[in-house]
Image (cartoon, rainbow, N blue to C red; front, side):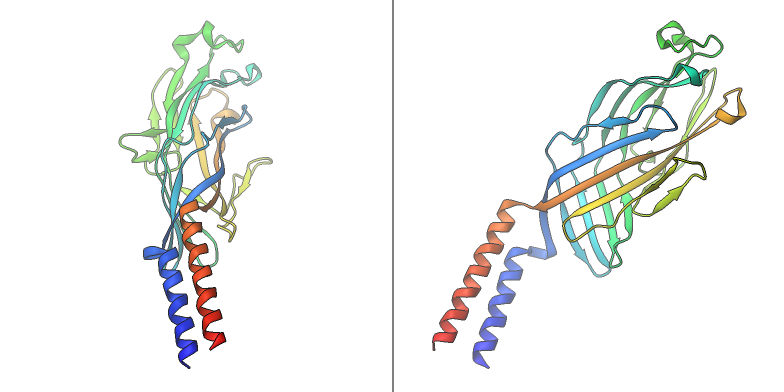
Length: 258
């Protein structure tokens, strides 16, 4: 009985050392952020190869808290589609990310909030057409992805962002989810995936852009922001866990030899 008690006590020491306060710092091994708007060219926002989060065990499941802001960043032009005039797409974009916080229940489903920051230039050539945004800059509209101190927008939800102009634009954002969202049109279905034991999760944020396009069929542009993360424990946490397991093995051998 004393041997069993000693092993149990040692195991408790290992677990409390490896996971203080039930929080394990996590590093990112890979990550991706993509913004899709209608049939326009996807906006790929590169991961800068840095960042992490805290993986927390809660009474109801698991949470990823404090995902590093600014680990995704892109600034540049995006191809437009002149055939979709008068709104021909996103001509220029500067985009990044805010802090991410996500919660998952024991079934694996869940989601949370992470702002997709920055703005895009919506290329509007009405009534000229032609697909060259530089020829009619008067009609181009700068649209923020989030508005105010991160209170609403893509990845957050809240009130729609309204941008007045010759053709007014309204962007309705949503929080992140691991579920499935279907806009009811071919090609506009996306599914997330739950947080796995391997530290992988896919989250989606449905986006809708409303506008006053003269063509009723083009007044609603559906889309998605898509976030994928792969996390692993920090080297320091792994070292603590390895040393604890080694200590437990030594205790076991000593107990068995007596």
